[in-house]
Length: 90
Image (cartoon, rainbow, N blue to C red; front, side, top):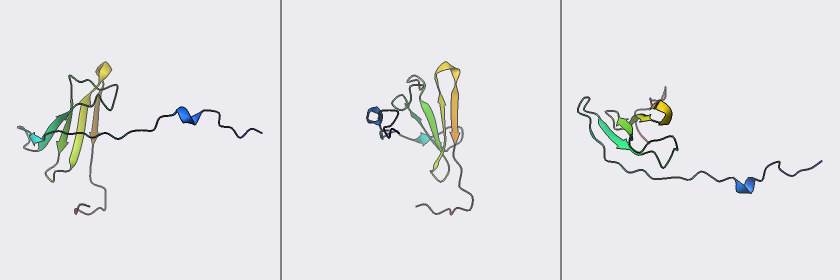
């Protein structure tokens, strides 16, 4: 019986962390903070000419991310409070 892995794991790259900087400004329609973020450094599906829109709730916590991707795909991620959680932040 062989104990060697079927795949050489030394060639698998580990995920890297990246910083994102943006300037959030009040959205004219809602008054909530929003910003545009270029996600091309994170996803090959992102389009530089169509940055993602990040929106923040009245408590300034991230509320949603919407991005127009290649092939006509739109990605929307909405965040909500965990049930039973406290309103006090970490």
